[in-house]
Each structure stands twice: as structure tokens, then as C-alpha cells.
Image 1 (cartoon, one colour):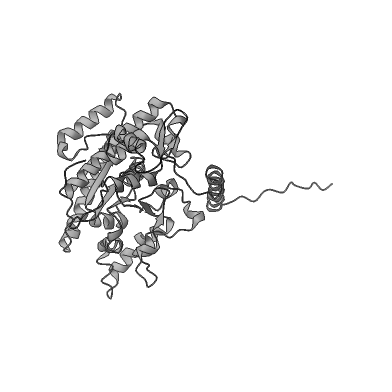
Image 2 (image 1 turned 120 degrees about the vertical axis):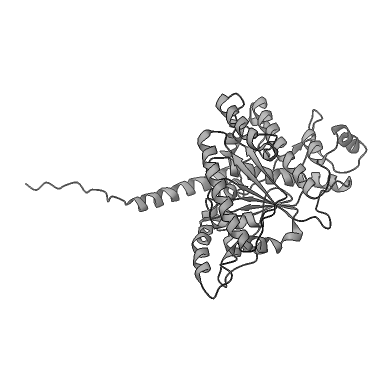
Length: 395
């Protein structure tokens, strides 16, 4: 009697398995995006309360109410209880009306803020994404640059790299004849005043191609790789006041190229022993490499650099000790305000949103307000540093 053996399902290789699973995740995320942002799967932007608008524009709430009652300026949406709400576009109109537009003035250079850390999980992308949006809400013409091939900030801004097929900064950095102008790569966001240079996995090609270009005897471009981001940004310099660069969590050619283009550097630090040990190695390696770059004739001159404590839990004694440890060594370079760890930030991220996008009503008010206050204080401190670099008084 012949017994038919059951057919075994073919065993997929590790490579095939992760390709299948990656594709499934991508498809499900796209479905979530379409569900969250119908009808065209594009992000919109909520309206802002009177208190928020007064803070972003830099006037009192009573003054804005007076303008509205006198029929001047914009017409906000008014609820049945008398609450006033404004769009981000209306905030810009108010700034223009009140002559409070903060754009660069003649002689003030483009600010390029590189946000860096050698270790993942330091809050680097969260910091970059919120900072760029805050600057836009304050009226600065802002360009967000995602240099991380993992493209987390790109996804947070509503672009799914593997499906939307948007070009990355790599197209403006590549060493062949297909190199494109940065102007062709920049994409708008749902925030007025804020554009983005998206990222995708293709950015990793720059890490492979740069050492090859450096070895070619007939190519001077490879030897001057560290000038490429600065040269690309020069093409769009007149369109922006500030650029926020989310660097990869590694000390490669992308990070080095960004640092040599930067006017300022924000180093994110999670206040735990292993993270600070990792940061010390990052600083030692970075310093040695920048010395080599300087020996080639390029001096990295910064208006400022600061260490930003992220994911901070004020009641955590070991974290308090780590913060004190850092302040005892280089207090002048420490940001005065810390980015707090908050469920509000992570919960907003579940729907690919930031604290500036989500509705406060969806959260426990105290939780949202605590996270938002900390975020605003950090970002306002960065604005003060920018204004000082331009020779203006702080905000």
C-alpha cells in the first residue's frame, strides 16, 4: 500500500522571508495612511487655538481678539462658545499684517542645523522633525533634510519612501552625470513654510560610492566629498532661512558631509551611562576625522553647538546624575531645557503625527501640555541661538 506523503511547504530563505515581511509591513502602513488621511492619502493640518497663534506670532491674545473684533486681519473660525481657531496660513497673514515676519535679512547667512548622534534611539529624528515644524510655525522658511536611509522623518512627514518613490538627497550628491539639482528633489509638506528633502535606501549608495570616487586618480570630486551638501544647499539658499538636517545614526560620509555644511550642531543625548559612553567614542572619532578634513583645507566653523538631553525622566535618579555629570564638564554647551520622555510623543507617532499636528483633545490634557511645553521650550531656545548668530536679540 502506497502512502502519499504530505507535501511540505517550501522553506523560504532568510532573505526571501524578510523581503516578504517588509513588503507586508509596507502595504499595511500604506493602508493605514489611506485610512488616516482620506480622500487622497495626503496629510492635512489642524487649526491652531488663539493661545497657540499668539505664542507663535509673538503678540498677546487680547491683541489678536481686538484685531478680530475691529475687523482687521484674518477671519478665524469661531465656535459656539466663542473660541477662535486659525489655520497655519492665517498665522502667516497675521505676521505680514503686523510686520513680524522673521525671514533672513541681507547679510544674514543661511542657518544649517545638523542634528546628530552616533547611537540610535537618542530621539534624534523626533527632535529634528519637531524643530523643523516649530520653526515653520514661527514663520521661518524651513527646509527639513532627511539624510538617514531609514527615512524615519520622511515617513513621519507623510511620505512612504518605498511606495511614493520620491527622490532623495542622493540624487544631488551622486558622482555621475545623472546628478540633479536639489530644487528638483524638494517636496512640500502639510505645513506652510516647510519643505522636505526626503530620504530612501538609495542614500546608502553615497557611503559606497564616496571611497571609490576618492580613489580615482582623475576625480577631484571624491577628494572634496565634504563640500557636496553645502554646494547643493547653495542652489536653494535664497528660498530658506534655516535648514534642519536629520543625520544618520552613524559616523559615515553622509554625516561628515552634513557637518562640514552645518553652521550649528545639536547633539542629542539620552542620559544613561551606556549612551554617554557611546557618545564619548563618537566625539573622539568625529574630532579625529574633522582634523583630517581641516588638514585638507576645509575648516568647520560653527556659530554654536549644544548637547540636548532627550527622553528625560525628571524623577529618574540615575538620569539626574548623568545630567549633572555632563553639566559639570561642559555647562556652556548644554541646552538649558530638556526634551522630556512622554507617551504623548510616542502615541502621536502611531498615526505618523507630531505634537504640533495632533489634536490636544485626543490626549489627557496634562500629559499633552507637559510634553508640548518641554518641546516648545527646547525649540524656542534653538530660535534664540539662531537669532544670536544673526546678531539679533533673542526671541
